[in-house]
Image (cartoon, rainbow, N blue to C red; front, side, top):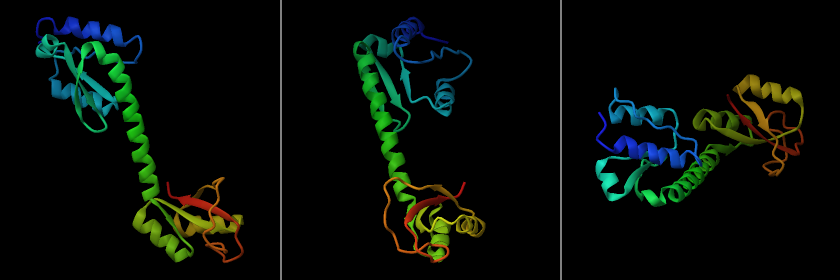
Length: 178
């Protein structure tokens, strides 16, 4: 059951913010707040705005970030501006975390033994040199389960020879398993 005035204020906030942001107003009575919080988190909603009777009296609301679970108290008059800043912070934070994860999960191999060891231990991407022969690509896939993912525009010189056949190699390639 909603406390008096909360539903109306929530609808007012929703009307103001829905002009700028894609959002949903959850006023389902049959579920507890914890259930609803979890439901929206599982759907991937980046922020949750909580509004209760004491919040309304104080002219504030609580914005909860999904990426850090940080609860931020925000004045209702500043909500639209602060929400934009919070969403940008979430985007930047998620991007930085993803970029770091890719870096941490990318290794270098100069031999097939290193290649196989890196895939077994790190389960990420492996950078190697490749001669460009499709037979080598197929052999690597059969032996390791990894497929070529990309040949970066910005090439690194890891070794002088192909990781598979030992022939001269001039292409650095990134491999990974699905």
